[in-house]
Image 1: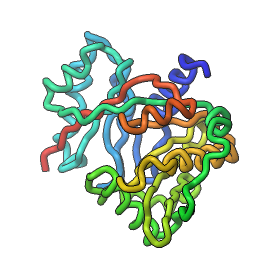
Image 2: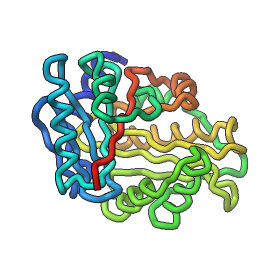
Image 3: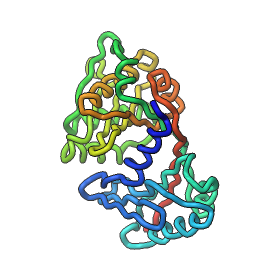
Image 4: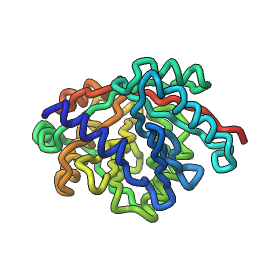
Length: 267
């Protein structure tokens, strides 16, 4: 894989020229910044892309903070999604000075779908574990429960997002559960980005007592096959430190580090 070209396409297709995520999402572009404004409380709002330098960064940040004081923004959580290759080099320091707070960084990893499919050929689930496609609210509830067990975080917003996806945009998402009998032990989803070269892998998490048995690898393989059938060239992941080594063995390359910087608008 040409990593420079893959990163260029990622920045262009999923950041700078990103289409609205949902029918109620709006994209605002101007002042060197692309901002997404979600139409619902569970929809993501924040900065997808910025093209700034030392002379323009502070004004661009101030403009976003000013928007947070408008009635439309009231009470919203707002994320400036930074990447380590963004300019200026001290963008993160400037965001801190403006009141943004960083979350845990993750590694942006990208791979050719064909390579992942080849490297995961033969990946199998443990005996007694099967994959179930999630298409309804009870399945979403099980995925949300796995997410909370695997990551130790509240999944209310994720649950609302997935419910919206399976109800109104089922063609843009593939959600799967690994079940051991009646027990959900791993869950993951893939989001399709029509008109781009990318499909995104999200939420891959295994409950603790089932880790180390190849389930995560099998779910990557399953989603790679689906991405290939849909004609996508690349898979993209924001990888945690736990999943990064596994993904590297499956053909993914680390292209950047992404760190969310959060701020909440006044109510």
